[in-house]
Length: 425
Image (cartoon, rainbow, N blue to C red; front, top):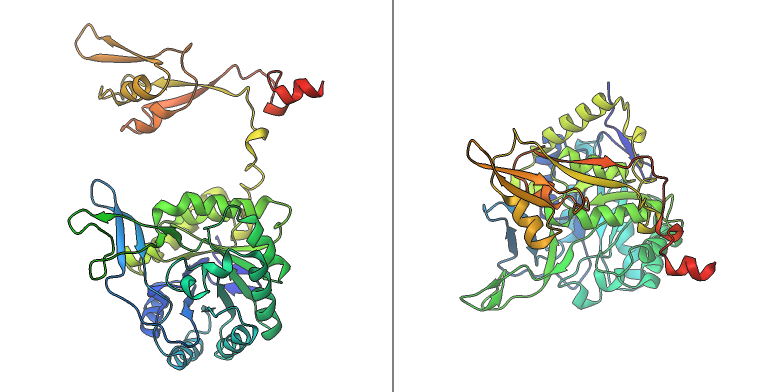
């Protein structure tokens, strides 16, 4: 039997799926429904100090595919606008009623030692197993000197983390903003400040669209719009990259990771864990499909682990990290050629158009004697880019085949055409 239990930052969880700090974790009613559905934990929506929070309407903009499926949400909602004492009372109730589930208290304060420490102590006293420092919100709060205004300054990241570590004796998760040039810099600062783990990514700063009738960004508030925080499936590649960098770089190795960003299925979660995450947080998928998606996530992840022979999350945590390298470490001698399955081909021609117009003119069209078209790869022109495989609408109709497999592993620094190598010689 596969065990979905995990430990992150010293906190035990019955499974790796937590609700992220967001509208789904805004109050006891929501979190209780989530726990009944099977979520292992929840990061309570961010709690702050005075002055009070006042939100606007509307708050969400969406990014859709052509078939109207939502792959991203942009929000301009602020941290919790409910009274702090009400949130703390509900957290205390949930801790008593659901002792086997994890509740992390997310907090945000101005860059003031007393403000951070006093808020952290109040939240810790409610019984949370850990505290998450929201240093990533890219809208509204950053204009007040909080959120990403703190998270983009490594000195502030380190200082804030250290203040809270000094104030409480429970695990501290530092939540990082992706709106930086190099995620290693704030992650290393969080580690220096004593963080038990980092949570990432927070939302990506963005304008999600423009209403061409009102000529204002969406979501629109009384005729005007603003930048907001982007999340959902579309940000997953960004989050995977930043997770992998923290897991593999020397400055941040050993720093535990609570991964966030576009996690919608068990497979998404498995990918983050394989790159080094100890647990995952979910927001957008729950907002779009409801809390019961965790049932599929739990079942799917357990089935994957059984199929692969993994008895625990720890068995495959970080297994993909060693294979994640800088470009200069890739094998230039590795050669692939596209192969088209004539029987599976529906003769749509998308592979030909993609290659002919935008790639390497490596696919030829011939007329079949019996009628129809045959698509053939010209090996001498094919560079193995695999664009044709991706645009093909038929699964496994186009595959990539390795050729010249007897050539030695060769990286760019070792390549004879590298001018730096020639200069060194």
